[in-house]
Amino acid sequence: MTDGPTAVIAFGRCDHGDDAAGLMLADILEQHRPGGLTIVRAPTARGEVHDVLQLHDTVYAIDTMCTGGTPGAVRRIDPRSEQLPARYPHGGQEVCLVDVVDAARSGRNDRAVVLFGIEGRWFTPQAGVSPEVAAAVHDLADRVLNALTAGHRRPRGSVRGTAG
Image (cartoon, rainbow, N blue to C red; front, side):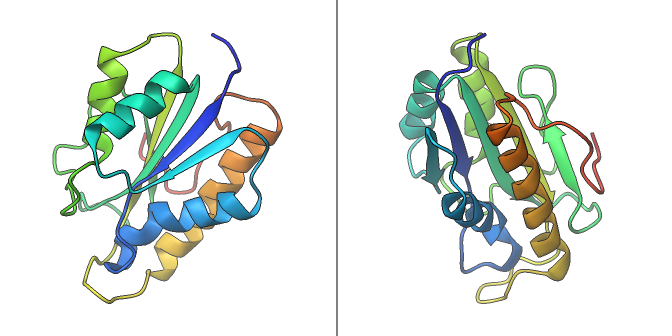
């Protein structure tokens, strides 16, 4: 594996409460962007996800989940060896983490692909982001930034509320 270009794919909808978590994380990373980082917000086509995975050696994908877990809990998922939670919703998005899993399993095997799902509390249109999810977004942004600036391919350490 090489330490080549890195991308973050941030999923979500800014007008549906906690579903904005991935986009919030993208905003934080944008403010502190390490050199060479590509940030893709809310891709709308599966081909776009496939292209990102083909062009980058390391890809982080972040989305909100609603699986009945503790709001704000962060789950790290290896798409090659783990399944998404059975109740992982698509949130009305045409493209989501499921597409990253499919592309990761069908593409290059030499890249690092790390998925993070943040358990949401509410997804009501026009609702704000819950305090638990906002805190989780900031914690996860710190982890990703630390990993990127230290030159690591994957964030290290535990995440509060991690389920896996």
